[in-house]
Length: 215
Image (tube, rainbow, N blue to C red; front, side, top):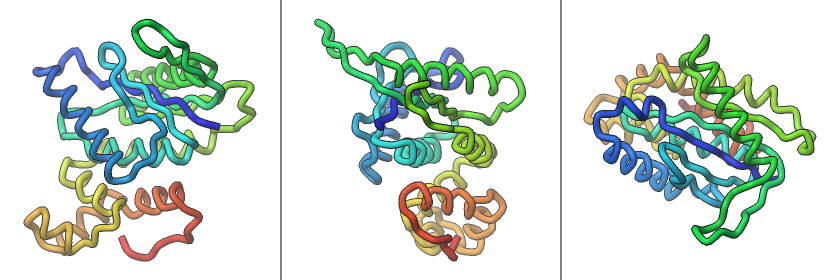
């Protein structure tokens, strides 16, 4: 069953240049989709600071959103609500309108993660809600996402770039050359940030592979 995703920009009202932030966000999404095409309908701006997209599965959505978070510039972050359930496009004179239980679930999910971030889990960014008709238990996915978001939210911009490169299969030597640092510095940064767990989690979302050995 396809999944709907609603995204919004964290702290959009306080951004010094909202237009530049929107351009950076859309360029980041386009880059991630070029590097690893996973969306049926890539995240696209709708109104205000909100974007909507459709993915073929929960695994694909979670993998794609991890890449987006890692690729975002240092002063920009997003929340993501993932909704599992039926959805449809309603024709309109201004274009198609997204509607259905999947979208309602995605709205509930983003409201839930917004509340969690504001109360007790400031690093939380992603949540999944399944419509009652979807008959899917999402507790394991949400437990994973909370831990994953905690790691990513604590990273520096450089460490996120390194992690993104590892997701795409770049070696530590290649990443060191791109950043102008030593391979040892790359290894230390990846190890301190827990990137090995992120890389392995991403690999499991993308394939049925056994645990990998290289960080």
